[in-house]
Image 1 (tube, one colour):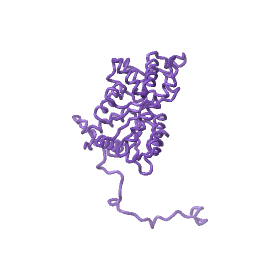
Image 2 (cartoon, rainbow, N blue to C red):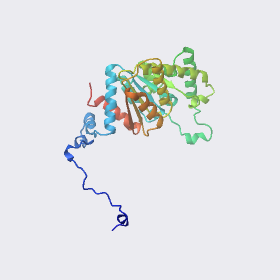
Image 3 (cartoon, rainbow, N blue to C red):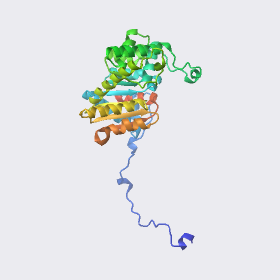
Image 4 (cartoon, rainbow, N blue to C red):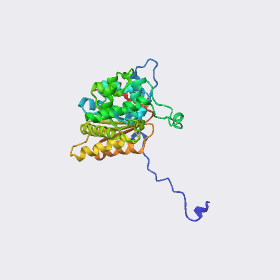
Length: 323
């Protein structure tokens, strides 16, 4: 006999446990939702049908369905992007989706301006910071600094946003790789491209021609422009945060509160965060807070952009809900 039983403590009896039939129990996973092997001659549409209809795949399909709905309703589909989106080679996909009506606005942080402009000019970007920082050479590319600062000054002079000013300047230069530039594509298609800059975060801010007043004025214009597009999201719009962990989630939250502060209704919209880790600000300021209280739906998709964004594009074009 156990020493515990001697003191009156015995293991709880299982004789009275109630059970039920497995056949009638509701379950979250069904064999009908399992993945299927991919045939060698499968089309992209066939491939998408083989994915397991579980967890992240369900989320991806739900986001794509909301984006297709937004396009049908004529509501904005806003892509908030960080520089990593450019550095992982996704500009051609986003430009194609823009042409197909799945991008109504690109809201970018400052690093996007740097990388997209360099791609347009020379077809390459993303220097080796570790190799150049010690010598004080990191970020000192002359052409990049001149371009961004000249655009900011001209934008401030003309009372336009930083994104539009840089797109206008790039297009005017007719760069060799313009077809790979989101700035050039957006300017040519008259799709708003807003730039949201924190002074000191980007290499152009320590260039000899840097003008903080012009940068501040043009990025503030872009904040107000983005706010207007967020206002129009009411009734079916979509906001995606792709690869910005701090700047754009903070900017988006402020656009939401500005719109509501002015008395506009902002409901029935969708937000989603795409990143390889789910950071605090995107989860809180994009996925949860703006849609709380039944105002909309928020989604999170975790994974590398170079995988998840092509999958999103495929689902948009070849997914089941094509209406």
